[in-house]
Length: 210
Image 1 (spheres, rainbow, N blue to C red):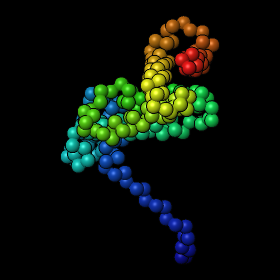
Image 2: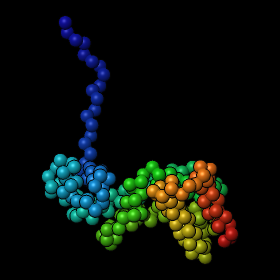
Image 3: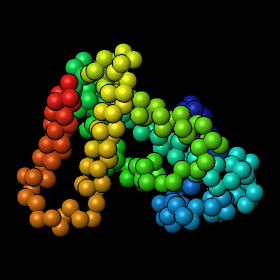
Image 4: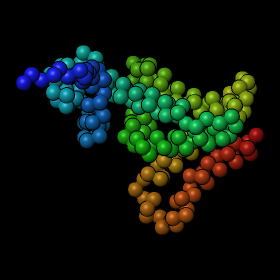
């Protein structure tokens, strides 16, 4: 008995990731399991099952690969900041931005450490990394320009407040994700209120400097 032909279209074969992207993924896996100090192109090639020379087609050195890994972390970070809930009120928008920062750090601890806890490769050789890192910081500047104004006379104030807010958020991430916070005998309600308390103090600090 003949089978009737199946009218359904065959499933498309999966598209193989190109080697350049695959090296970045493999590098993250090596860093996650062995630490950044053990990242090497040889380990990446072994992870991918390709020849030891294959990654060199795209990355002349380990530092070039690390720079691309870090650049993509900043790109992803900036995209998540941009994806926050936006508000017409710049103070509310700043609060939303801060919470999105904390959310990214909690959801992507490896990428966060790579961005802010890893010595950079030589910046002069990696302009794309510098550009994407600067873009993430510019998102904060843009919101602060809506708070303070965008005139040339406000540029220093915007940058000072940007550094204040960034330092505060970075410290909050370090404290809340560190190993000692559960040893501090803090009441649950304190832990539950700490983010809102910090955000309120940031807003108060901006208002006091107005």
